[in-house]
Length: 474
Image (cartoon, rainbow, N blue to C red; front, side, top):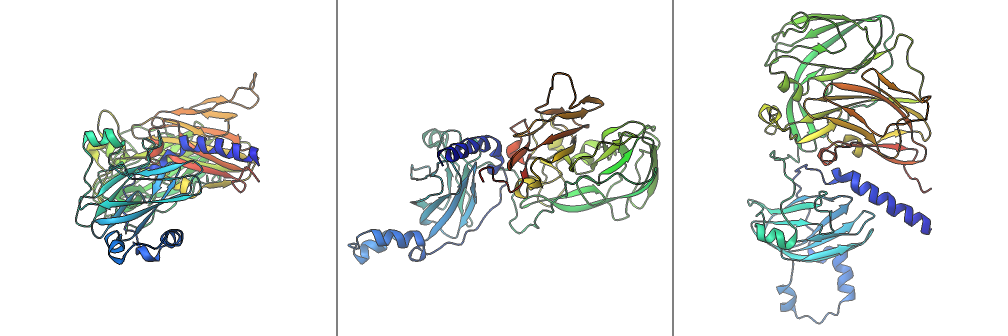
């Protein structure tokens, strides 16, 4: 049992470093159901343990407007943004669902501290301008444990520099787009790699579809797509195959589009030219080189078309094929530079000399494989096709808890049979570079998928492989 708790603590510390996306910058405004004081379990327990000597007048003077529950985990609060109907005094109950100690601390010094698996409460006065709160455990605020409580028709007053120095506070991380709690839920992108297409000639129709898409909880952008998904469909062929792409730009589109296959050998001013709404064209190419390749829209400004969702992966296998494995997945890293809610992404943000994306994601949606892990069998042989679509940020692809024993990156190969038994911990990919990695997850558990540029993990570049039942202690 002691060893079990020790291992649990070590696991918690690792996940605390990696799962900083739990405190991600998703500004989802949450309106809690405020529970009247007399009806809460916490208050009932307090009433049972306190002497009932207060007068009715004294009781009325200390009455709160209700109880707000805030859950803590590594490393975030849920919800992190709350809204109440009116200012006044409230009971805040912190429920610690993590495996590390956490607290909730307010600018006036009011604080509730809860050990792992425990709860604690504190009463605070929420003014009309609202409040901020943090976890004051060293490092936890910086990892994302911040939040706000606002009052309807009001705005959260941000602490002054002096107040921030006193209470370690400050506003919760904000994107400059107000999240919509009524936005449609995101659609999980299936990470499974497709099987090799049969035959040697492949006729594929790709339609450029302009459509709204939820890219993170509460955040909708008007994206441009190939085939209605971001990224576009994964195409898998082998060396020697011929690929005929029929590109269609519907008459309902607002702008011209085009397509550029990095896996092709064709003139830029031939198949890659743009087509207007209502037009179509044929793009034919022969797969001459194996690898993981990018395709994207090249219509000017190409930066905006890529940043707005027009990219995808092509897998070209060697003519003799790839060795069999147990499971294969395709993961595309990319960036979102948010425009107004429901509008196009921001070309101005994307064009900045120092890239600062609002989200960095795998397969189009922030944290989708953290919310719904990719399930594999313990000890299975796993192959992942990885592409960094950019448009501007490098990737350091890493799976916590394993080692890549096979890496094929841009034509260079590390194989399992290499002299000296060398392995790889991370694969560096500049925008438009791809790789194939293989590995095994040797025990039941959770294995985070990240870019090891950790400033982006908290912005959505986090997923999980779940090996077996996910519990290494059974």
